Amino acid sequence: MLVLLAALVALSRLGFADWEHREADIMGTRITVELFHADPLIAAQAIEAVMQEMHRIDATMSPYLESSELARINRGAHRHAVKVSAELFALIDRSIGFSELTQGAFDITFASVGFLYDYRHRKRPDQAQLQAAAGLVNYQNLVMDAEAHTIGFTRPGVRVDLGGIAKGYAVDRCIGLLQAQGIGNALVTAGGDSRMIGDRWGRSWTIGIRDPRRKEGVVALLPLKDVAVSTSGDYERYFDEQGVRYHHIIDPKSGDSARELQSVTIIGPDATTTDALSTSVFVLGRERGMQLVNELPDIDAILVDSKGRLHYSLGLQAAGNMDDYVKTSTETEPAENP
Image (cartoon, rainbow, N blue to C red; front, side, top):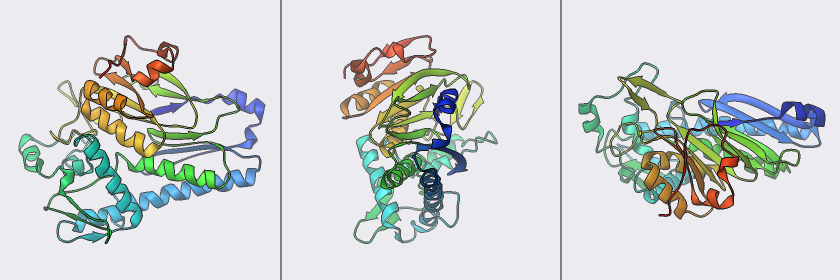
């Protein structure tokens, strides 16, 4: 989860009325929008447009709403190809691209086993259930027809969930709406996914990376502008059982929670990419995940490993002394050249 560190006192002195700020619970998470426009009416209309867009995307892509397009795919795609909107088809196709890039570490069919977990009630699948679902979790079980905009499943039991990419996509869509309305300074956040345009009263936006083991703690502060940033961590939906943490970031190959890292923060040009990569790198682990980050253009990362140590991508090391950004940590370790 990302923490926006707002200088509220400074804002009050500089004219808070010129900034519009609103929060709402949509897409199963907290949505935060903050923007500036000299005309308060335009600012208020822009905020409302963002909230409406978040609701629209939730209505299309939520796996929990029976009326959503995604739910319709999960209900019928094992029997026949399901026609979907161009928007949803494109996002699922992009998801498959991330699956190929990460050799299956990112896989929206994780839902085929993910639905067996209930973190609130401390429920997890047994070994027999994991084995039964093993063949279902594979993005190659999706049959995509680009001309007809249809999606099918190769076998019964396959399910898809866009939880690792949809919120980032929604953030990007909302930033696009704001830019189309002439907004040049804004931040849109959906849970752990944020994107910012411009600056904040002439200064970079300051984003805090939450300490995975201390709810109010921060391990690093990042001064950012005109980028997206996403954090995936093992502390959002989880339960501990006999010293083992079961959480919502599932390794598609095992059907179990990935445990080599505690959190992954990705910085990049758009939130769709950072959202998908934060999940991917979490599953890949420190060595393989950081190697992928260092090979990709315009992508950086901060990883917190299972012992709470911080690791930085080569791009962040080259940008300056990362110790200047570290708030609290016991040990830090730079990434090695791949």
